[in-house]
Image 1 (cartoon, protein in one colour):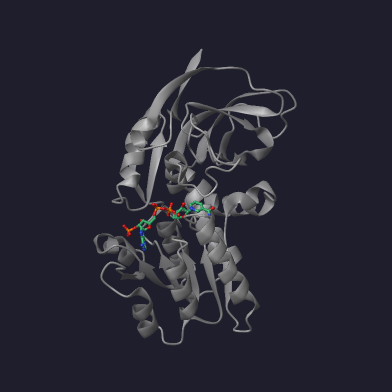
Image 2 (spheres, rainbow, N blue to C red):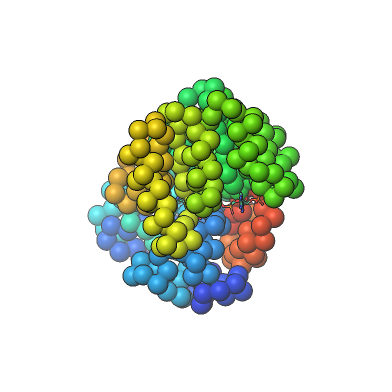
Length: 338
Ligand SMILES: NC(=O)c1ccc[n+]([C@@H]2O[C@H](COP(=O)([O-])OP(=O)(O)OC[C@H]3O[C@@H](n4cnc5c(N)ncnc54)[C@H](OP(=O)(O)O)[C@@H]3O)[C@@H](O)[C@H]2O)c1
């Protein structure tokens, strides 16, 4: 039997994404085979495909051809020897980083995430990447408390809309930086929008909150936003940057800023967040995914899905996300879920 994936045949625009066929093999020892029900299409998929990821050109970089796809939800379809964590039929998720745009994925069984079968896979897959980033930056990095005031930079995106929903749940007072055309969603989610095209973000926030902000969430990882955000914090405030740096030079400047801010006795802190921590300690991630699945099941969060595409139409889905018009998430789904 054969199955299909969407492969980045070389680095470049979405049309390098082509359907490829592979033999369906039995899973190896310690591995599960997952029939994919939903896969996320996210910003890091684009930076990997275009060769703009920070690690491109290093031994960690993806060399074409490779199958993109950072996160999946699916059903265990077969297991290899010595698999104890899952059985055939279990609903699972995986933070694949690459490999998700595929009808079947083979994954180490001890790296699978238990997912309640009652959840809609298209919604649940947004929790595997975008919501875990939002939840952990908010509750583990910034440790927000009810009533606090925060600024969200990149508020209309996949992670930004998740931050807005989680912030509303925590009764935060929120400001959201987004293009004017996307302000209605920022307002609908309970935040005051700021248009970075036409307004001075720092000046607006300073005038609105002269006492300062408790937290700033920065999805751009740009030094101008970081320095502006830090200047807005009150004593005890935290700025968390979770975006992808544009290069090693930019990363070095940001790291130097973090060191200086964190040693200065000004009561402000600057934290960098990355899901790469999952490779070293999965426990906090499993706890937080379980919390997020519960919030989704009880209807406390409702992921904003701009569009769903059939799994094999990843090229169209990538082109849409890259167009800059998307609000929220873009998701690929198996044909039976369309
Ligand atoms: N740390 C991690 O582990 C991790 C994991 C996933 C993603 N990321 C990174 O996090 C960042 C955000 O990801 P995402 O999935 O939310 O991306 P996304 O869905 O593409 O959203 C990014 C948003 O940024 C806004 N934007 C673009 N230029 C801007 C600017 N100059 N100022 C303010 N907003 C601007 C865009 O909205 P407007 O049209 O409103 O401008 C867009 O909605 C990306 O850099 C991504 O690579 C990091």
